[in-house]
Amino acid sequence: MNGAHWHLVVNHLPIIFPIVGVIVMITGLVSKSEAVKRTAFMIFILGALAAIAAMNTGEGAEEVVENINGVSENFIESHEEAAETFAILSYILGGISLLGLWASFKQKSFSSIISIATLIFAFVVLFFAKQTGTTGGEIRHTEIRSGNNIPASENNNAEKDEDD
Image (cartoon, rainbow, N blue to C red; front, side):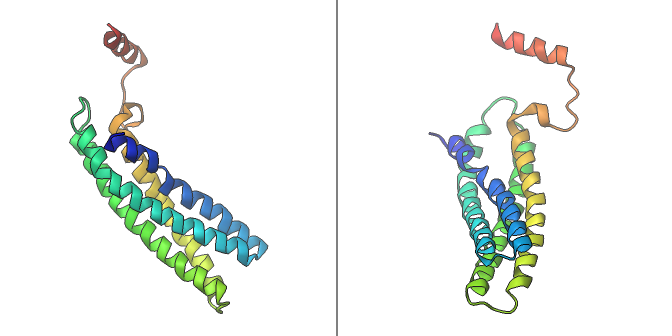
């Protein structure tokens, strides 16, 4: 497996974990279940760890794809910048979640406030997750690039030319 393959294996996890964590945290807040809220905190922590893995495989992926025809350095740079911001926010969410997990186990009076703050911050993280995922997809998936106005007939002709 090359660097790009490793990155593709792990890069969806930092996006998926916060989505699942938000759903679990909302469930925990509605049901007033500390166990469910603790589970959400652990999911957010896993998301931060997955972000570390994605960031560590990003450079290897860049080395592979920058030599592929049709891959623009601008798309790679855009993704790299979005990923750095998303990773930092994911690490912060993981840190807040560690604090929330500790507060929950120690039954601190501010535990509920941390749960709500974590949920709100997780929505911010999800916004940047979407940006990072989209910019990453644009590197190789021309069909999702903004301003892609290639008519379907031209696209089909390009595919036929590749087959010849």
